[in-house]
Image (cartoon, rainbow, N blue to C red; front, side, top):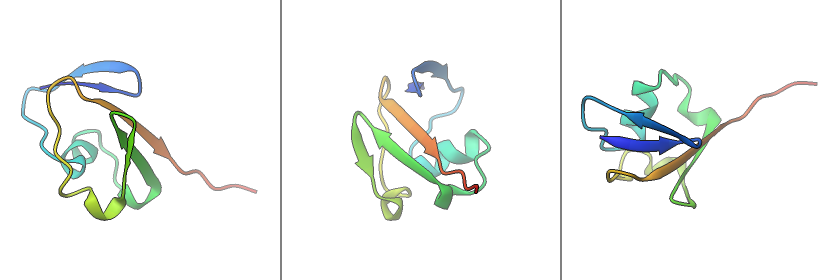
Length: 68
C-alpha cells in the first residue's frame, strides 16, 4: 500500500486499513495525542478505528506537545 504521510511517500508491505492500523505501524503509542487528516478532511478520534484508506491517500498526522 502506498500512502503520502506528512508530505512523504511511504510504501507499506501489508495493507493499512484504518488510522489505528497506521498509528500502530508508525509506532505512535498515544493516539489520543494526535490529530489526523485524510485528504484534507479532519478525522474525529472516535472514527480512528473506522476511517479506511485507499492507495495514494494523503495523510497528515500532528502530535500535540505540552510545555510551559
